[in-house]
Length: 207
Image (cartoon, rainbow, N blue to C red):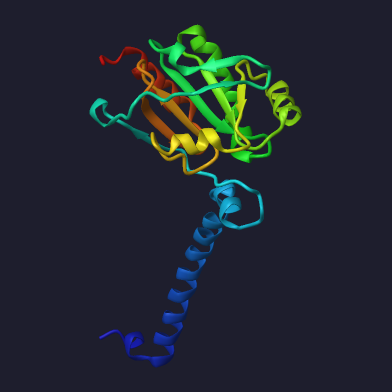
């Protein structure tokens, strides 16, 4: 038998070395955990940022699981009337947001690009859950948002959504099918590639 394996001093030193190696691996892993998602960390920290940041989770609804068409008839900050019933025949994207929401600012350029890419084929509508006109329009100018938003500071539209699909977070984005029903929901900042796929599918699916 190897002499070193019977030496208590050697065994103790080997155990210490093993522990140090484990600790050396664990420290970087712990550091990754701390920094891996600053937005999620901010939302969990309870530091009064006043939003719940989702993780971009996507849920799609098969035709048989879709609710009745969403009914919204309201005016945007610019005074334009938005009537969803008049948009039947096209998919519609509805984004719930507000200006001070960090994930909303992250996704804004993606929503701008997609709305411009799809143009008249797919109307985009914003629903601002917190801001008065000045803050909302400043955000829209800053990010060059090409579509308009409805003010919902009284929560009436958000409340109405509960009978269709729970929003759960701000931002949230809904993709409506050509009959005005919720086809998909994204909780949190959108991944533009995923949202484009959802819209493409809504444009081409058989109903």
